[in-house]
Length: 194
Image (cartoon, rainbow, N blue to C red):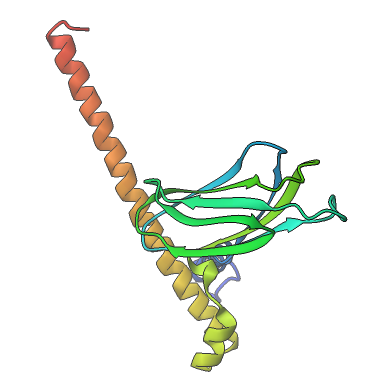
């Protein structure tokens, strides 16, 4: 007599874990920034190359009902290339595909003459598969329900795989650097320089 599959079978557990990972990968990050009267507030994100980035930002007017302050925004790549620059903005957005891996930096500051108190800015930053418009994809490809969810999972798994390859390569280069330092330390000790 064959045993019935338990509700906690490995296949079911694996499917549940994959769904949780996919849901985490599909989320976007919204951040509230409180800009000081003078100075800059920056947000950075480490992103690998060839990844789509979309962001919307807007000033929150609750603390400034009668005035209309403006901000300046500058987004730079890991090598300092300017990807977006805007001045006298109250709302805006930027979009780009990364060309190099590393920390991408978005900096905000108040540029209006109406300084008063600080300003709050809402930044909705989406990276990778979180930038996909699944409603449009579903209509275009005429998929829905379980098939749509499976497509989302497939894209999430591909993104996770690419991220794992990136992290493994980055860890490999770090290990190589440690090995070089260890070798140099041995060499200098052998030569009695340290």
